[in-house]
Length: 191
Image (cartoon, rainbow, N blue to C red; front, side, top):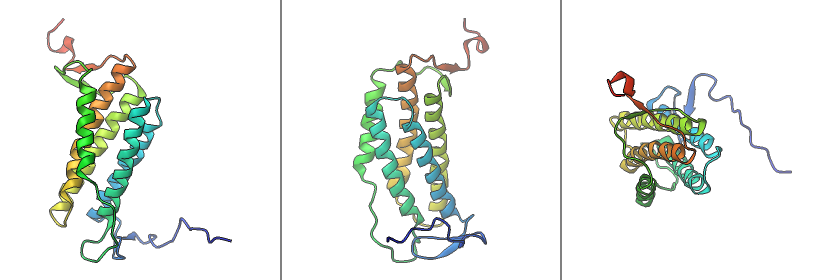
């Protein structure tokens, strides 16, 4: 009979965890914070993928999740120790996000105001993913000040937050949800 994988190890009971490579660090370490933010983003992306959205967007979100998992692994490794070979995020993924953003934008009205998140759960989940993505990006930039972060990961997250914003607009358009502009017309004197 195959040996079962144990979820709990009890190794973190004292507030420490291991980076890839074995180095023990506090769970509050900036590297752990950074890959934790990526993990949270991956979870919200999965939640978004579970919504009633078009199949093409669902497939793109799955590709995004796979690359977020790669980013998590790359950030989780100890930069001071030799590590096993890991997959990398390829420039093609960033180019694909740009292509998707441009494709979605072709059918959307021009933006003349800021847009308040909301109107439909799927739209709101896009905005949650966008804001978690920005937080993950900020934590990677902080980490990059003290330890190496592959620049392509930061570029990927920068483009990804733009993708989530445009996807929110596309989903709103598909569902015929009215976007709420800010400032609202009543507040800026327009009628």
